[in-house]
Image (cartoon, rainbow, N blue to C red):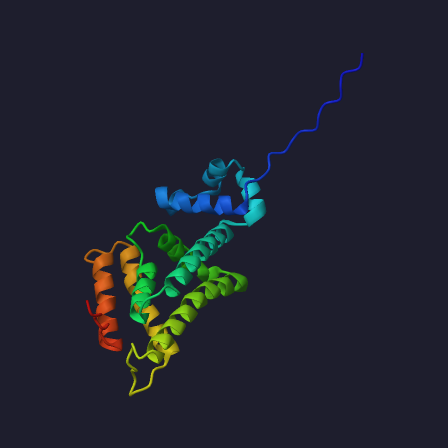
Length: 214
């Protein structure tokens, strides 16, 4: 009697890309970036490190895609904050709150700093993708500042003129510098102090927000 034909081996389907990227971000948040290895991530999502390399080609690409995924979620939250009712200054404060890291273990900023660090040897494609992330934050800020001036909420600077693009570049440089201090845990700086400095700068530059009547 012939043995029944063996059934074909079933392959375990790979988890969706978003699940892998979410797992990578969770590992950064819980264990730190140094613990994010292909082998550890593979164990977390039920894939081999070789399988992960097949999809992402390198750890640099994995990190960049994880950053893009995280930025996509932040972009959705930023759009919600910037289109909600309220004054332009309230929305600008919400933008700043979203920009500045929570503390020195903020996983998004931990990842950003690592991607920046690796960008010296990055390909043109990777640099373009990083620039696209920066560009989205910049464009939203320019539009918000221009809207505040148009509404008469922000006073023009630079001898009666207001160049929203130029002011946005300066403000983001300030935010980046302060945010790095928080992200690396520089002694003497914390999120509350940084937000206070930035809001004082905005008060001096754009005018203090008007108090609403009770």
